Length: 136
Image 1 (cartoon, rainbow, N blue to C red):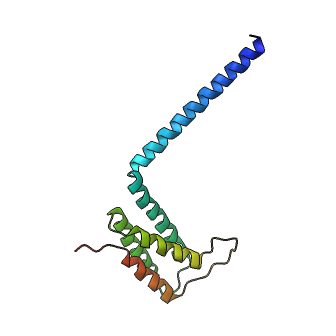
Image 2 (tube, rainbow, N blue to C red; image 1 turned 60 degrees about the vertical axis):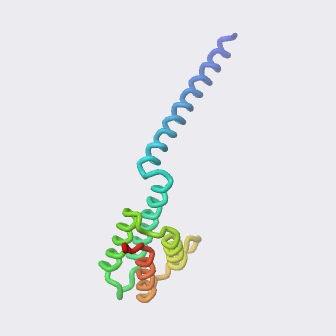
Image 3 (cartoon, one colour; image 1 turned 30 degrees about the vertical axis):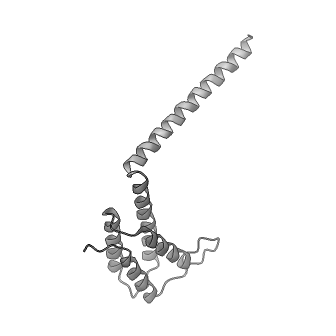
């Protein structure tokens, strides 16, 4: 084998080993994070908290004057606690958050944002409260 062929084969071997080390490290980190959030079930609740936090920021930024900020924060804290305690129905929660974001914060190319009215925010907070399972 010529000297050039030996250098090329050695280079490929090093690149391949480096690629496998990075791949194994990435899989390990992914499994660690997946385990820390609680597996598939924990991922659903983690995603719900992330969506809830984003919607809360949007609502507080465009909150009408008729709704106190403390009321909004208190309601979102109650829902956040229910998520941590697994006392929430995730499907209606996702549908509610999605409908709010679609209606008041266009995901398209438009930068126009519609400010919700006081009755709309009150109705949203009431529907948000309904997603929590009540202890009986």
